[in-house]
Image 1 (tube, one colour):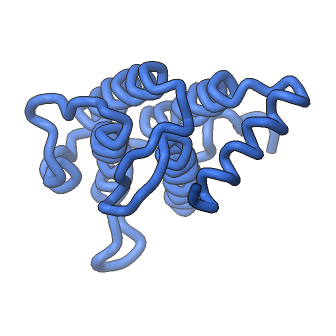
Image 2: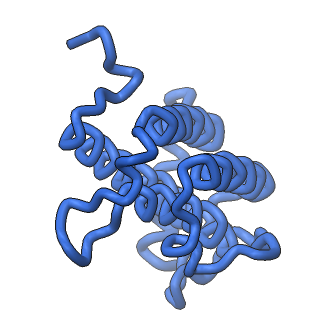
Length: 170
């Protein structure tokens, strides 16, 4: 048994002992993160979608489309099928605000369905060619979303856009 699998089993045991439900907690975190990402994409003005902090760095639209693309592609490691028409180049080709937001929303539906269909976190899988488990894939999904949520918040703040969930608190 690999160390990663042992760690997941220990985490599952601790979670059970303290009344945590890893799948429910993951889905609750996903819902909160989705709400923040989509609301920030909606609040960011369309004229800021091409903005990028420096040459060679993702633009606003590219960050949101990167999130959407990952929401479609990473779940293939959970056994989910990649929807027709989804490709890596979407990040560069889908730049219109309304289309970006629609892709984000659709990608989160796909992602949630994939996670719900794969509740067993100990199932072995391959992730980017490496041995992993469904739990490892789910952990990557959440950490990836939070990484790019933080990036999107920074982009918004630089462009004088206050994240909707913190408006009125400042």
